[in-house]
Length: 236
Ligand SMILES: *Cc1c(COP(=O)(O)O)cnc(C)c1O
Image (spheres, rainbow, N blue to C red):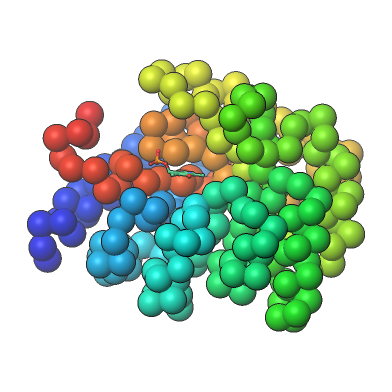
């Protein structure tokens, strides 16, 4: 094992310890939570190290950067598209990514549906919600989500697996707590109202600086980048 892999293995152990601690604190089962390695920062060679260390879930946020990695390693991973997606890129990501986390508008739903029909496949999607209301964040507002869900349910090639959000970046991870609990409450409410199917329970939330709070608030899929790939000196 080279130095980089060694360091990554330590980071993985550290991440696992912290997820387990957050599970214990909040009475959740470790099995209810998965995390993806967000590899947008790293080269294909480093991505290969991820696979060798047993990581399967991979997240990328731009098709242009992901392309060479997906083409080289497509069948080794479970691929998550987590970035803002332009409708004209639907043809690139549908069929190559297993899950799309950033469905936030009707026009994109239609573009994904069209491409899925062409390929005769189903596409798993998270509906991205802008809980914080920050204008810089993508995602549908909590007020608009019911309209969007009605449109998405009409697309028979799209399977909604749950909701996704991004918290505003803050030095104190506690500031993300209301965003994460807000997403959980919105999910429960939408399922109650039958706007979401009862199996669309997944919550994609929590990044390197706030994932423990996300676990405590019900996350089922964490998106971890810098904590996995940064050097040891930056680890707190
Ligand atoms: C980059 C990115 C992440 C990972 O962020 P880190 O803070 O490096 O863990 C998670 N989600 C999305 C949508 C991203 O673009």
